[in-house]
Length: 262
Image 1: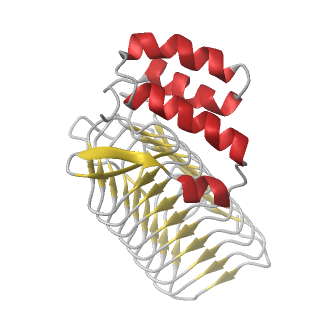
Image 2: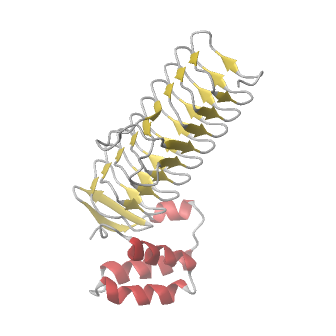
Image 3: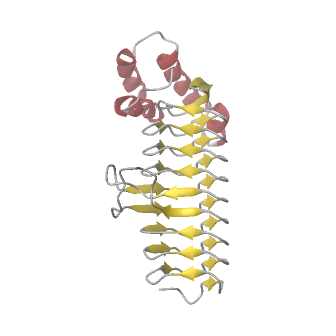
């Protein structure tokens, strides 16, 4: 079903069963397969491939040569019915690849709202990208990676499968991340190591000095106190009673599969 207000270039190929909302534009030589739903106001430029099952929200911009909703590169994948969900107001730049999930995990890859996925970024199967993130040029999010809200993964960085990049953290360019990056942390290197807090990012997003001081104290407990993580956890839990933002540290430590960068 294609809304009457949608503008579809004559050279685009739209298979039966595709749902295209109001005021969507589809550029020349784009291919949209059965099982795709595109929300109103989204712009799909030329030479884009979108396969399903995929749901794309409102007011997104998808640039040329992006591959959205393709089957994953996991050898275990054998055609199962998995899907991709993309929210609203995302910018998906040239040659970005976003793959559907696998039945070995959640069966779905998720991209939230207001994200910038830069040229040739790779979003692998079962990845969860939050909101307001920046995924830089040629960055790789391996399968099952989670990226928290307002995080930044800069150009040419690679995130190992099953790792978490915490909210408001910042991964410097050309980094190899093989363990979880706690929220708010600035990290870089191969392998990535912590270099303090993403203070500039926190300030830009409205964190005031008292809260920044609390987050800094929590960081020091983890990285500079000499305590084991088991000893740090109750300290962070107590701090989180006054500063809920500190609770993000506790949540990651409790749920980490690969441990945190040190």
